[in-house]
Image (cartoon, rainbow, N blue to C red; front, side, top):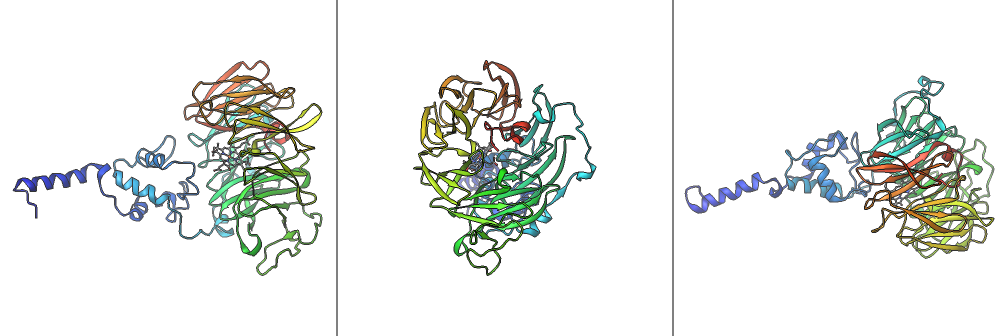
Length: 524
Ligand code: DHE
C-alpha cells in the first residue's frame, strides 16, 4: 500500500494528482450520467433534440467526431450552448462524443402526436401586414442560407444590401422553397424542422418538427400544402402551408412491410402532385393534392390502412401512387413538363428515365459517376432541349439530349462539381468545382458551343460553389464556401466582380422570382 511517507508513496500521490488535474488524461465518468447532467436539458433525454439539435448519428453526419469534441469543449460562435472545457475532462468529452455517435437501439416514435406537439406559432397569419414593409422588389430578394453559423440572410437583389439576418434551425438542407406568390419562404432542417417566414414583414410565421432526420421539403404549386421527406422515421408528412399544422403522416412502406427512407420530395406543378423517390425501395411515389384527383388505374393507389392488401384501391385524401422501378433512385431531375423523371441509378453505371404518365422506365441513360441531378439545369442547344448535370465523382459536366436520351458531350472540368446554374437571359451556364485541389474554381460554359469560356477563382485556395442569378439574369452570385466566407456578385456578361459581402459559409442562395417562375436555369 503506498504511503506519503516513503518515496514511492509520493510518486503514487503525484500520479493520482496528475490523473485528477490534467483533464485530457482523466478517466471519463459514465457517459449516460454525463449526458443526463450536461446535455439532456437542451438536446432531450432521448437525444431527439429540444432547443438544441438531435444528437443521433443520422443527424450528425455532417459533423466529424473531432469537430463534435471541439464544439463540446469550446462551443461555437452564435449558439446558446456554453463551452464545457472547465467542466468536462478530455475523457468526458470523448465519452460523450462516442455516446452521441452510437445509434439508438430502437427507432424513436415520431408520429402525428409528437409532430403536433412540436408546433410553434410565432405570428398568426391574421396579424401580418397586407403589403410589404420594405421598399425592395419583393420578387428580387435572395434567401441566403449561411450554414457556418446557422443563419439566413435576406438580400436585396438590386442593391445587394442585407435586409434581414436571423438564426435558423440547425443545419438547413435543400433549397429554400417559396409560396407561389413569393411572399413566404419555407426551410427544412436536417433535424426535421420546417419553418415558414414572411418576406413582407420579416417575421417568422410558424415552425413544426415533421421528423427526426429530414431530407427536404416541397411546397405544392397551389401553395396549400408542404410535404416533408424524412429519413427518420420512414415517413412523408403533409402540412397545411398556412401555419404549418400537420394534416397527414404517410408511412413509407412497400411490399411485405419493408420501410424506406425518402431520398427527396418535389412538386410536379403541371401534375398537381408531389413526387418522392425512396432510398431503400426501388419505387417512385406520386401523391396528388388536388381536392378531387383524377382516378388512376386500379392497383396504383395505395393508402396503407392496417390489413390492406397490396395494390388495393383507395381514393382517400392524398392517396399514394406507387411506381415500381428496377433500381433505386437517389437523386433525380424532371423534364420541364414534369412528364419524365431522370434518375441516377444506385449502381453508378447508368441512369434511368421514368415516364410518370405510363408509370414505368422508358429509357436507360448514359450517366455514370454519380451525376448530381438535383442541381441539373435545362436549356436549348442547337434547337434541342438538353439537360446539363455535374458529377460528384468525375471531372465533367454531362450534356444530354432530352429527346434521344443520348449524351451529346462530356465537358471536362477541373474536378467533380456539386452545383450548376444558368438563366434564360444569359448564354452562359456556371458550374462549380466542389472537390479536389481546384475547388476554388468556377467554370463558365457557353451554352451555344458547350465550351468552357472562362474559369473564375473568386478567392484562390477557398472553395467556391453554388451560383444563383438575379431575376433579370444580369448578375451571378457565387459563394465562398468557408466559415469566414463571402457572397461574390459578378456581372454575368463581363464576369467582373461587382461586390463582395462577408458571410458565414453561405451555402445555397435562392432568388424569389427565378424560383417561383421555375426558371430552367435554377433548382425547383
Ligand atoms: Fe444536398 C439540395 C441530397 C449533401 C447542400 N441535396 C439537395 C437536394 C437533395 C440533396 C436531394 C434537393 C432537395 C431540395 O432542394 O429540395 N445532399 C444530398 C445528398 O444525398 C448528399 C450528397 C448527402 C447527404 O448527406 O445528404 C447531400 N448537400 C450535401 C452537402 O454536403 C451540402 C454541400 C452541404 C449541406 O448543407 O449539407 C449540400 N444540398 C445542398 C444545397 C442544396 C441541396 C445547398 C440546395 C441546392 C439548390 O440550389 O437548390
